[in-house]
Image (tube, rainbow, N blue to C red):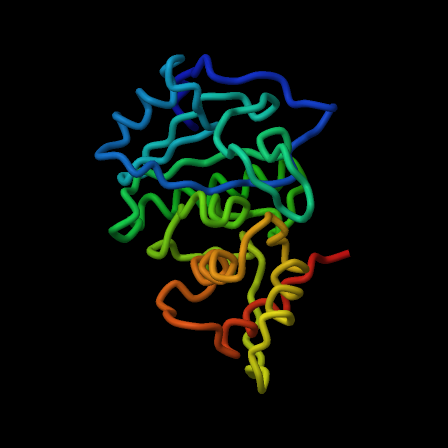
Amino acid sequence: MPIWHPSPNFGPRRDGLEPSLVVIHYTAMDSAEAALERLCDPAAEVSSHYLIAGDGRLWKMVREEDRAWHAGAGEWRGQKDINSRSIGIELDNRGDHPFSELQMAALENLLQDIMDRWGIAPDGVIGHSDMAPGRKFDPGARFDWQRLERKKLAQQRSFGEDPQAAAMQSFRALAHDAGFTAEADDEVLLAAVRLRYRPWAKGPLEPTDLSPLRNTIRRT
């Protein structure tokens, strides 16, 4: 059970919306306690529904029925006001080191509960950088998306053969169909998609950049 530590930074979800997404973040702070203090500080005007420490401790700051202030400006699958459509999970991590086993296990348990409770499919679990390319970079290059994919807690990437060529127009079309609809130039979009699927990749567009996207069109 999460530790209830209420934040004053929340409001009602707009237009009668209910959670259809989960957005994963890292805190980029020195400790979970420092992040908890900031997420509950009315002067900061930020919050999240949950915070998971590196040792697996779990805090709940905003009820899932309410709108936390975690996502900010951005877009996913052509939809804006992500705060009204999502549940936010902050992970105690600076972004420059691996996420601990205890933390990942706690995240998996929490994700499964949220997805069951709200009927959220694996393709509804995204990173902050997915919906705000170029503006946000969390949960970052050290986050293990493939671990979540194997447990059906995130959209499974494609492992098919690489296409013969890497045309930016084709890449943008595949990224759009996968959900990356926020406005971004070619370089920013490539960096955002790579953060999710190929965080080690460098340089210009390659055929391998298209491969993970070929199986990520939203299920019907």
